[in-house]
Every structure is written in C-alpha cells, then in structure tokens.
Length: 375
Ligand SMILES: [Zn+2]
Image (cartoon, rainbow, N blue to C red; front, side):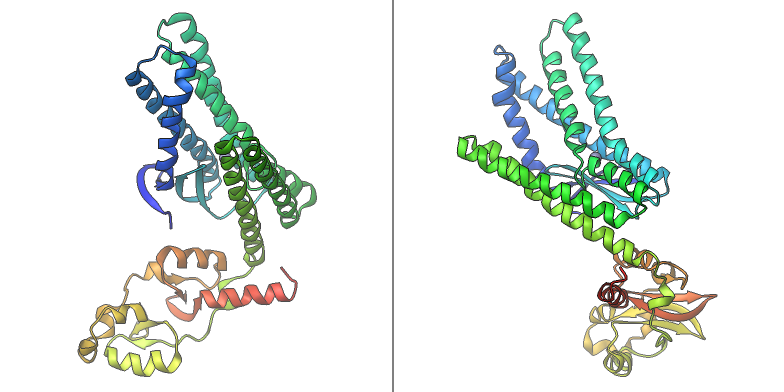
C-alpha cells in the first residue's frame, strides 16, 4: 500500500504523496533559493528568492505528476486500470493493474510520459523566449528557463533504454514485436537497466572521490533505486507470464467446505477451524452462499461471547467482494485478494459454490510451473 497520504483524484485515479517527497521538495526549494537563483540574478531580495523557489518547485512537481498522468491516461484508454499514482523521491510511479497486451499498446503508454515532458519543456521555452522580449521583470524568464531544462532532462533521462525506465519499455516493446517473446525482451532490457544503474553508482563514487559529495550521493541513490526497479520489474513480468494462462478452476480447492450461518462461533471454531485448518469458510443458508467468515472476524469477538454469537451475525456479507467465477484468470483473483484483503475467494458458478481459491493455491501452481521449467 502507498506509504503516504492522498492528495487529490484525477481521471478517477487517486494521487498519493510519499513522505520522502517532502524531504526532496524542501531540498529543491532550498537549493533554488540559496544556490540557483542568486547565481542567475544577483539582485533578488531574499523574499523574492524564496517565493520564486517555492513556485518553481511546485510547478516542477506538477510537471512530474503530469508525466505520470500521461502514461496513465493512455493506459486507461487501453482498458488498463490505474489503481493509484504515488509521488515520491525520484518522481512518480503509476500503479497499473494488468499490462498492455500488445507491443504497440505498451509503446504508446511508455512514450506518452516523455512526449508530455517534452511538450511542457517546449511550452516553458516559449514562455522564456517571449517573456525576455516583453517583460522587464527577470523572475519569469529565470523560472521558465529552469523549467525548460528540467523537463527536458526528465524526458531524456526517462528515455534511457534500460527497463523499467520509459525508454527501456519502448525498447522492450520493439524487441517484443520483433521476436514475439516478452520474457526475453524484458530480460534484455532489464539487463541494460541494471548496467546503467551500475554506471550511475560508479560515477557517484567517482564524484565523491573528486570532492563533489552531494552530487555523488544522488547518483548512487538513483543508481540503487534503478537497480532494484529493474530486478523487480523483471520478476513481475515473469510472474505475469507464468500465471497469465492459468484459470481459477485449475488451482481451486474443490469441493469447498461450507458452514451454516446459524451455528455459533464456538462450534465453528472447534468443528471447522481446528478440524480443517483453513483460514476462512464460505457461509451458506438453505444451500445459497450468503457470506464468508475468517479467523480475523472471530478474533474480533470476545471469547466469552462465542457460544452466544452466530456466524451469520459477524460474517462478511458482501458477495461481490469475495466471489469469483471459475473461468476467471488467477491474476485477476490475486488482484482481487490484494484489493479486498481477503486471503481467499469463493469460486461461484450459477449461484453455486464450486470451490475456494487462496493465495497458497496460486503460489503452489507458480512453484510447480517454475520447477518444471514451463514458465
Ligand atoms: Zn515515465
């Protein structure tokens, strides 16, 4: 879950701000006010410097958000759900549910961010050009110059062809289209990503030896971050590849053990939880599913009350949250489990309980497939 708080919602996507973001925001404001602006125009008064720094940093971070929104907008138009966007230390991350099914689609999503950053850079270049001609105040040209350069840098940095950077995603889509092999394309581009990360880390140490300590530290920081992102991105893709063809009915436990909603908690604990050692059970009434009950629900109730409390009174009755069709893919099941925070889903067909699927079922299948080299 995003480690931060919700700022606003755009295109139905919640935007979160990670706590590390505040440190970076303050650092940027401070660097601008104390270092950059005094260099650009020695006559600024302190209040002007700090106001300019704050406004510039704010626009810069809005640009980063717009970069992420551009990716998200194009992805949404392809039917991919965007769960949230988190702004954090090095920019933003869009949490997508699902991946593009075609190389062309993936290419469009990846290119949208850098293209928008280039557009923003171009806009500030125009503002800079005309404000120099028409305005006497020097703050607008100075700010717009800075934003032209930073947005250009943002576009170019992201176009470096190492996965999971945007450029790496574009290259991956090209290799994917040529070879038809997404795993191979991901492996190649994530290696380039790791190579680039290593290059950043080494340059960082070099900088430190040369005496530019802060610069070096930043490079090492970004390098380590990229390194981990490349590794994680590769693992994610493999997981998706391996599980994309597996259906819920292939891994579910069937038949499911169901309980009657009218029994008491002490009975369900002794006769079901201890006996079968499952974490939750579907609850039925007159042969139709009415809810699900888990150990967590029972722990909420004091032990003395167990003989007097009925299962149906404390179960989760929201069927849409935990029922899934046997024909659904296991990836969808995994997403639903994470989203609803139910470790298990009830497999339903024509209002009948067919079985139950847990994360453990899915992980066992994953292990089996990997062990047998069918991934
Ligand atoms: Zn991007």
